[in-house]
Length: 179
Image 1 (cartoon, rainbow, N blue to C red):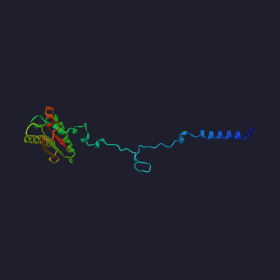
Image 2 (spheres, rainbow, N blue to C red):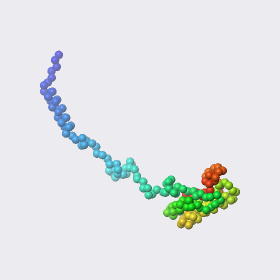
Image 3 (cartoon, rainbow, N blue to C red):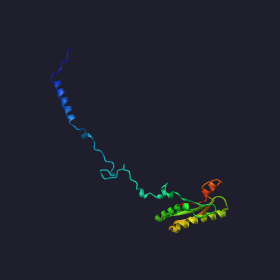
Image 4 (tube, rainbow, N blue to C red):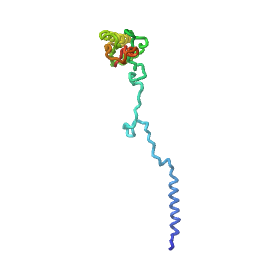
C-alpha cells in the first residue's frame, strides 16, 4: 500500500509554523508580566484602607511603666532592720516614680509598707506604716501631690520571701509602690 502526500500541504505547513514562531519571538517578555503591586501604601487604589497594612508603633507613646528594663520596673524600696529611713541606693527609684507621677497626673499609687516576721503584730503594723510614710513624704518633697498617693501598712502579712534567714528577712523589709 502506498501513501500519497500532497506536495502542497507540506510546504504550507512549514510556512505556517515559521510564521507562528516569528510572531511569538517578536513579543518581549517584559510586556507579558503583570504589573507589580506596591504594598507599602496603607490604602488600596480605591482609597479604602488596606487590611494587609501594618501600623507602625510610635515608641514615644509607650508607657514607661511597661518597660521591664526601665527604672520604673523597680517598685520596691528596701530598708535596714528596724528602720524606716530611705537608703541612698533607693532614692533614684523614688525620684523616678515621683517624676512619672508628676507627668501623669491621672495616675495614683498606694505605697504599701511591709516588715519581716520578727516582732509583734502591732509593732510590725506601726513600722510598716512608718516605712510607707517615709516613701510618701519623699515623693511629696519631690512634688507629687498628696491626692496621687496613699500610704498603708501591711506589716508582716504580705511576705515577699519565705524563710527564717537574713536573706528572707531583708526581702520582706520593704515598701511596694503599686499603681
